Length: 186
Image 1 (cartoon, one colour):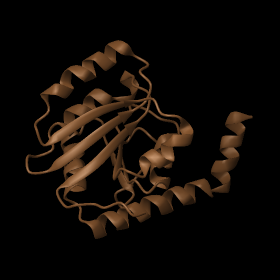
Image 2: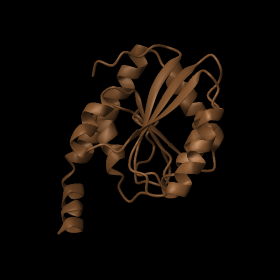
Image 3: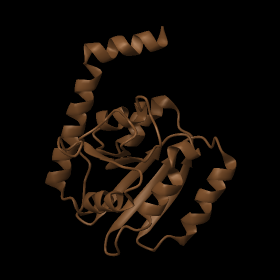
Image 4: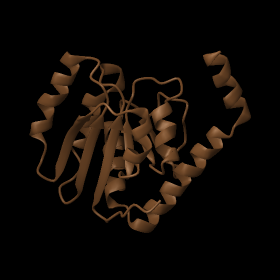
């Protein structure tokens, strides 16, 4: 993974359908509180499932401070996702619930540490340097994770990127998990 990472800035992406369950509004709220002096971009990818919810999200975006930017990039084909992910540092998905979270694991497989809620099966990510799993009610912890991402230097980012990739590889190669998924789709 050869992504340049400068201290003081980070590129985040959100990849999911736009609906209240995916909690984009809370994500935007926390993102907007990244401290001045740091620079961050959040690009949103996914189809709009709930137009009224998307309108609420859009209303908050022009209120961002100048050191932050959010862009809606639209839906993306599955085959394009890996290439897209390779141009970002971190994946951001504060979902209200996921049984698995394919985009989460795919993000890690692309070397993007994840910032997710604690409402997925993926836990204790910070310990293994693959990301953060943050309680939905703890906006302060989310802001702190976003800030930590921005402040990361190249060497630290490379270590976290590699750890995320290694963790995803272990998930993909877990025979029990593969068998469970076959049962779901059988």
